[in-house]
Image (cartoon, rainbow, N blue to C red; front, side, top):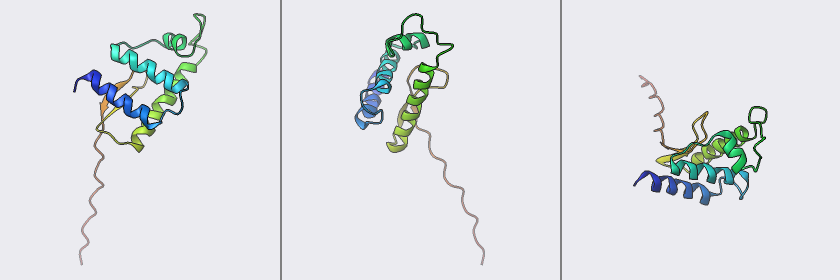
Length: 119
């Protein structure tokens, strides 16, 4: 499966699960980041503010954390989604970035073996 079809498959699973809630700002942000990621582009914070949140060119990303707050919320929603719906691959938003990437699910560590009890 190529990268574009894999990202689409993962995105469809997130959408159909209802993990992002109704068609609100989180869903709109998800779709915007998905489209940019499919294009291989990482948008700037101001681009997101303009396209997703309908801010104008005077929007000051240094004094208004709107985009950062919503990206943080979306990151958490994706984490919660994969806790409820485990998958071999998942969509994540790397810290400090505004893009979706595919990450292989980490294999859970086996619990430590208990010492044998001698009788």
